View 1 (cartoon, rainbow, N blue to C red):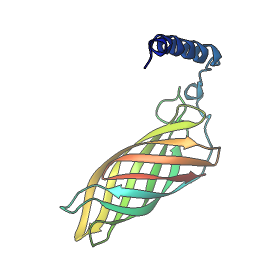
View 2 (cartoon, one colour; view 1 turned 30 degrees about the horizontal axis):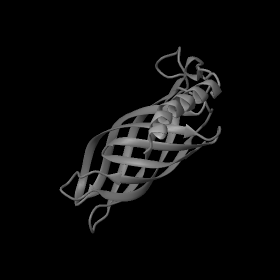
View 3 (cartoon, helix red, strand yellow; view 1 turned 180 degrees about the vertical axis):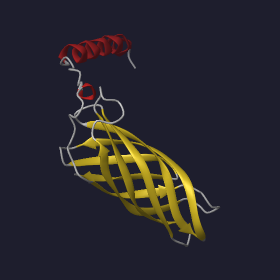
Length: 171
């Protein structure tokens, strides 16, 4: 590197920073969370998904497919001053750990928070009843987020115990 290039590098970085700072528009805050009821109105949410099940019974983690249905039971959730709702979520997941298959039936209370016009987040405490070598019931806890493409379709990501899933939600 020549001496001239060494002197120009900090100047170039300063110019690039100044240009980027000056050319950005002022960001507007999205206050969707402050407007109770300002979320998609739906009777049922249908969510097909791909999933990974974590090691639960001495097997390696398994991959699978599944689906959830969520039915709102309280439109303006437990906190009336923010944009939230509560739903009952239930479904079926088929996992393939190793050379076997397992059927899980999750049931959870889903508390949704509509924090932005494009984003919602949720928590789900619940229970999973399933089969893998024998009948079992496990406590479950998930946290998730949705990126809303529009009022009827969203990308849904969920992580927790006993699974991680990614899929699409339809209203």
